[in-house]
Amino acid sequence: MSEAELIAASARDDRPVLFTQDAIGWTPWLTPLSEDQLTNRHWAGLVEPSRAKSPYFMLLARDPEILEARTKTDKDIFYNPAGGLPRAERELVATAASRLNGCIFCASVHARFASSLSKRTADVQRLLNDGVSIDFGERWNAVVAASVALTQTPIAFDRQHIERLRQSGLDDLAIADVIYSAGFFNWANRLMLSLGEPTAASKG
Amino acid sequence: MAEAERDVIDLLIDAREDTAIDRIRRQRPTARENAQKSFEALFAPGSPSGVTVKERYAIATFVASLHRDDGIAAFYRDGLAALDMENNVAEAIESEANSGAAAGPYGRYPKGPLSIEDGTGPVHQVSAANRRILGARLSAALEHAHLLVFRPREASPAALQALAAAGWSTTEIVTLSQLVAFLCFQIRAIVGLKALANATIA
Image (cartoon, rainbow over all chains, first blue to last red; front, top):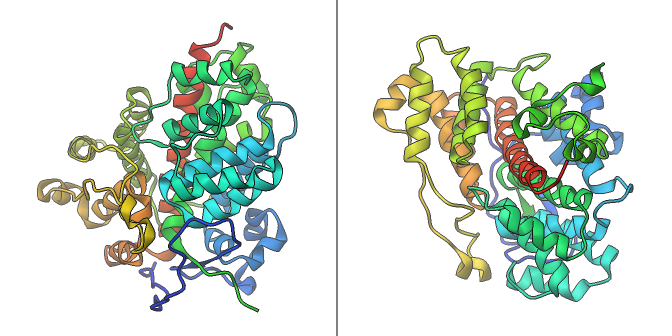
């Protein structure tokens, strides 16, 4: 197999350098597949045919088996409506992990979800502006602290985080959702950060 | 019955059937099933790409060891040992994981207002002695894995270029990236769920 060829990095001056809730773009550093290269296995890996329009998913489609399993894991963690952590707080966990790891693109997407589901747009914006140590009130403080501890390497999450989440009213399914949501963004952030870069909102 | 089988996460958190943690995991059945399918796609791929299974276990042993969880590291080390008859790769990986110890995430942001948050930490380079054992290709993968684990915000085209120079194809880089990123998920799920299981009366 031949060595990877990188997409020539143009000296862009519109790369976002701040965390934002605005819709921004993402561009790959490696060549995605094109639609005419897709086999049935690739289409299955994409899960949703509309993702053939996304350079990110078309790059990941080069290994369709892991892409398919990744996407189905993601969907259940963030969209399964049966009990557990309210979806707004699953998105808060994702935003906090992305903020700490430094994924401006991931944080923009999931901050928007957290804001629209929680109606706490200003609090979410403070998380983006000032980082993971701000004071939201105890329940969100406990959720963000758990996401931070799970995002550190080595992992700092322990029984004290669990007790604090319980005291904030989370049951054990909700705590498992915190663990899965933070864990999943430590997967997603590393793909988004290392295979390409954010771009300014697409114009026109 | 397939549904009752324990998966890798169950094994590593020591979850028994019909305990509280088992019942919790089964309330997210698609995530449960696909966390396992992800593991299988990476460690027993249906159509293996150019990344060999031995390379995958070697990189996984390194990544798990960097997370300092003995049980998970032992699981991948055992997988590597079964493929590494002379046992010299496993020893070199162990030595690299020790010299690569760090606390993350850290790293520099693209120059701008976030630069005040820049944090520094080690940039890992495989030692000359271990490079002779591991080869240029696997050594480049370990250096990239260290970047992904500890300072993902410093990822760059130059880091991918270093992989390409060591012989990694575009598709292989995608597989390598998924491997390391998936492990960062799986290890967190295991450490977190194990703590929850231990804090929960079955």
